[in-house]
Amino acid sequence: MTLYEKIAERITTMIDKGVLKPGDKIPSIRQMSRQMNVSLNTVKEAYALLEDRWMILARPQSGYYVSRSNHSLDTRPKIELADLKPTEVSTEKLYKMVGEDSHNPDFIHFGISSPNHTLFPLNKFQKYFSVELRDNKKTAISYLPTPGSRELREQIAWRYAQIGCPIEPEDVIITSGCLEAIVLALSVLCNKGDTVVIESPFFPFCVLTLQQLGLNAIEVCTHPETGISLEILEYVLENNNVAACFVIPNINNPMGTIMPDKKKQRLVELLNSSGIPLIEDDTYGDICFGLNRPSICKSYDKSGSVLLCGSFSKTIAPGFRLGWIVPGRYKQQVELAKIALNYSTSSIIQLAMSRFLKSGGYDRYLRKIKTEYAKNTISTIHAVIRHFPEGTRVSSPKGGYELWVEMPKGVNSILLYEQAKQENIIIAPGAIFSSTDKYLNCIRLCTSYWSEAIQEAIKRLGKLAKNQLVY
Ligand SMILES: Cc1ncc(COP(=O)(O)O)c(C=O)c1O
Image (cartoon, rainbow, N blue to C red; front, side, top):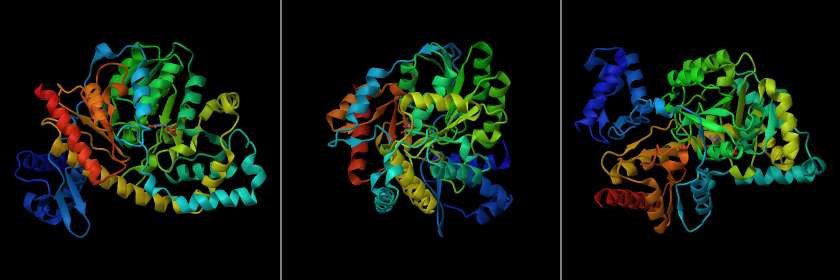
């Protein structure tokens, strides 16, 4: 353990033992450095680590406060070698049910993860849509070329260049959401019956996609703080015939982890040495809670074998169905597959979005939503810890608006789903995040909204979970 980790451990122990309670102010960086006789930088790093784990919170001009007791997920990945073989993917029925229930306006929704619609920049989009339809009518209502609007592709490429990944506009193909990008990538890289490595737990849309394409999956566990386990991945690659690997390195859904830069680089190198392409899903990359936007695996790609996928669904509006793929050396095949599928993506949406990005408003908007989502996530964490059964653990999301909740083993999340629905609450049961029964005692909660009604719903969910343990 490094010195700063030791200091973070000491503070964690004090929180665990109740010496420091949620809401207590902890010594300033200067005071702590004097008390422990270590440098200011060491304390800063220790506090940053505790902030990452949601143990403490910095309040501007006030200091650091205990945010919660130590309820974060067990950080050791569980290695279950018996699971590391290709399995058919099937969660169709359950997922369909959650999907349908998630559209009932009478319910409180924690199920499908959607951005908070009250934060949507309505005035800007109304204006840009009208301007495009008035001044650019022919383009706005015609097919755009298959790769999409040149201006939009320039904006997307420029944003990646800002984080050290020199992508050219010609490298980008606009898609109808990230899901289309993923389907295009998988259909170009795999044949029916092939095996794809995915993370575990992994996001439900993808389960369905693999199933529809007739692909098998090997689930490699994701470390709750650093992402997919490379040791297990290496073992899997050595022992299986794998066609592609699909990873969400930034703000993984549902864990909210960000893979450290060095690990991203090692992942790309490991796959490259085995000749296996990487599908990198960066859908949430823009909404990390930290100041700096995390890097992407594509930055380390020297052979064009990383197919980078993204979208505006989680930042702006999933209903726009606007995403992209940077397919590297598979560009020609992906473009042909896109032509066969739908030729090109909605023109008017592309034109309006490229105006929004060009206006410079996107980064201001991102700052606003990131603050809001961080606040709502903390409120949800506090409510879960307060109301759920003892022994419940939660993830430490580094961005986005999803919280993974691991309840004691006796709680059945599919039963909880049915019980919660009777009370007009929809959750995402853990079972849809794997094609095995691994996460039966887990749920994912969408944290993009916060209100008294939501707080009350979490209290009711907690009560239902507690009741399951009694009977
Ligand atoms: C990680 C991740 N990638 C992709 C998608 C789908 O994105 P889109 O709505 O842009 O197709 C989702 C939606 O839940 C997601 O969580």
